[in-house]
Image 1 (cartoon, one colour):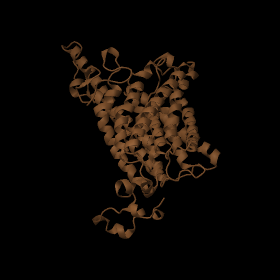
Image 2: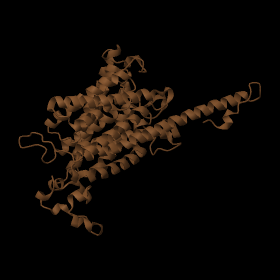
Image 3: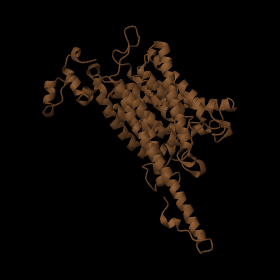
Image 4: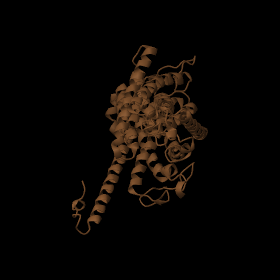
Length: 478
């Protein structure tokens, strides 16, 4: 609502009429800016809540002896990401690209560090609007970091989370974000690579680091038999997994929808509808695909199909007509099923399917822009997709961005994980892995009643945590 003073307009023949009209214009502009800031903050809050979705996903796919570790990880990673993004990451990602005299260049930004109102940002003082944008983009960085750890469940040392988190949010992710979102390298390829909300910038980046981590870690004990055949290690709770998927699904409305940055023209509704359709198509496709292969309606695959559909539409959601979200999401759902099964056969142990749902689907979603980008919705006619008469040029641009991002993230992430492995070690001992990370890393089970005898629990309030590591391995649940 406008302030009363703005509504007190003088008649045209009264002195000061022009000044009052100007005041109304200023008030309307201020109001529009405030609405846009609210949309960014609200969208960022939805994306922030996606951390609960990742928690549900990972806890659901973990065995009961490892669920508490996932809770601790979410707290630590959110905290590390918050500080590092504010101090360093945002400035490297969005602190200018060298245009119009602003600091920075094609590689990284160079302003906006220790970000606050009035500090230097792109050559001018930062405003509250910039702060809203910074918060929104922080939630993206935190999501990308959360994706990394899905492939490391049940065997990674807890100390690795904060150490790699600093490197990832302070350097790896900002480089890709600057290239894709901040006017850096990807804008210089062809007519400019399209990635509306981050199929490559957020999801492929996180999944590629997850792949590097899984390779350095190696598979969980018992994942492969003596002949190298993969064996299922069921998670302890499909309901918790399902809650996680639904929370992620809802959070994606902020992820993609608020990437419009502004509410002008209500275009965010178009993006949100496309997002929802892709998720549904992905779940249906995964259900059909896994049933055709196994004659079973695998719950985990169906949920991952929804996620793959969401990841697939993240890059094109602002550039496609609504109808295109259905085939894009459907293909993403097919890809994730074959991806999970194929990566398993390569002896890469990825308990939640992060490398498939976020990595392979992220690649597909980025390439889909080169096929489905509508000439009505792109800024440059050269970015039009193949199916709208744009030829193969944009598809090649999309492929180049995918390849560059994958190589950079994998090489740097693998090097960091390898260095950590050679120094502090990134994997817990076999004894600790069998006992479970809850007790070995945190001193208490997430589900104590399930593992600690009732007689011991009665006095637990006055006793030290029970040391289950001394229990013979045959008595420790697998």
